[in-house]
Length: 307
Image (cartoon, rainbow, N blue to C red; front, top):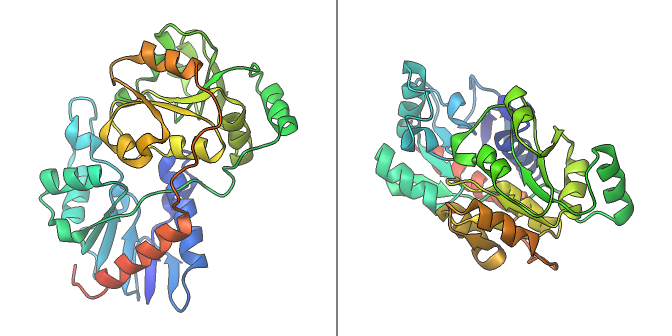
């Protein structure tokens, strides 16, 4: 079987880029007799996978698989302005796809309810920490802390700060009272530099991120809506406790591995994080190779169906 894979988002520093990079590498390592080629205009292939909504195509001549990471823009239309014709066509393409991949049952329920896609066409395939996400030694942690002027005891929040995302509530988190310094990791834009009394690292590489996870008292996740929540899984892989707002997808992924607070209680979130103690629970026992093998199964199913 020969599958075209749209790898264009691989350079994105946010979660979609992580998903594409890790899944593509794992697909290649588990391909066996199959082949995956990087194309977003599929030719001479048995199936086409768009791992992001923006790559979904209405007029493909081969069966299409689309990954939908969440339906936030449909659930909160007043906050997300992607309502033009191209945006609607992307969702139409997803509705017509042979198979749709989602990261959680929570998103699967949204897809069935909001896009009217038959549940039998929806595959839930979880994400996983990258191989670089592992505990780092004290010397490496100290080196990275010094590089970014991070104090010895701090709370960590990870995510793109290049544009304000209402559901992430980073500004509200920064304004909430807390006992420990708050370090925000991710690409920034001018609005992020106006946040009060936080330390911004900007974009960091995977080894630096693993060291920052390892050195933190806890990771905090203030989001009031998520499709999966990859930073908490990465933090646990680095041995770092997680405190999160209690939203369905994150609860589904982490279960009892995290401390949950009411989604509107950001002060409680920060207070709980300040009292977090190691050892943190291990992350879910799921790897990108597991995800790739499940994805190959989806490709095989899709290849028998006309899109």
